[in-house]
Length: 309
Image 1 (cartoon, one colour):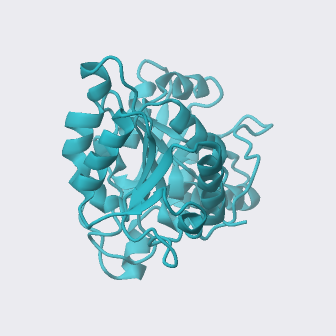
Image 2 (tube, helix red, strand yellow):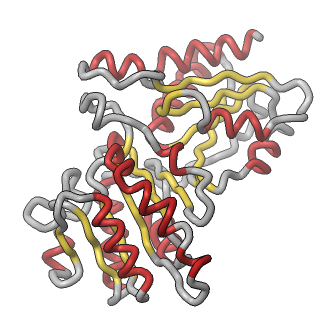
């Protein structure tokens, strides 16, 4: 089963379990079922609880936060992750604070959105801007990969009754969902690669290939909770290996790699490198885009350099 079908199944199951759960977003009604078909079929099953909205992301999140404050559960779809920028005021100045300002309310609100490149959508539809929403007190940021337990992630986020942003890299939708990913290899790794979301697959492929050809054991660790960041887990990994590679689609600086590096401050003998997206807009050429994002040749090269360092 593909990732898109797994997410659809998880959300459908939640709609069956929670009679007060609503879904809001642009073009999510059947027969279209959303830009990436994640909600396809759901409005047919639950016609009164799936609501299509005007093209106004601030209004969608603002309206949904009001629903959540009154006790309803809400899942919001933002059509492209790039458009999450339009909701920044609602997130940082409203939903992140309402539980503190109004002590007797909860906010069972999920904002889910497809993020990232790899499909040739250009400068305004292929960005990875999730780092700008990490570190906001009161908002949890999660990211999925093809090995994720989708029902568990969405169910726990909803039942936490706190606002949660879930990042779904759009390249994942067509990939096969795989159960039971092993975080830890049986051998002591030569290098630990830490990544998340849509970059996981290429990291795993690179690690398998380089182990077969160069006999370098690279262990790939996927991160699902972006914020709050688990510094302790990263530091614990340094007991198993002193060489780290951090991989992210977002541009370098003030992001995932920096959070990983800061987790290792004070640990002796650490060596690390990183592979990230470009620090300029994503080009419209798909081939050029793919060459600029984390890819097998770039990851392969960094693993070799780290191993020889």
